[in-house]
Length: 162
Image: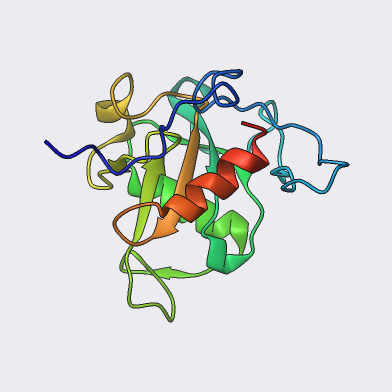
């Protein structure tokens, strides 16, 4: 049986922090990979103020590499389809999405769990994934294509200090 195409290689360095935790290390002073610098804090996520607090579900989202947009902490309505995460990220990141694709790109955008690299179905409600594929507060990666490349996974792991 083939192994899943995720990012979950286990090494001593990756075992220091829980998988997908929101620990954002300071930028390396020794020429290593730059740390992920979020535009928002976990305590002040961006989102639609009309969503009642009891229905808010927060995630840390890394934007598609091709956009150059910085990652952010955002919240969405847990009763809406997962696609709401994609649209909220695009709105905050300043890039346009049309029919599930970055404008000008032929490839669909997908949402991946990190470090597992699992694709999250966009058509189901956020609530339907919670506790299984999605976990509130965890890191998600928005990227073009059907899988996260090994190179992208390594870069994210290095940026997270793993």
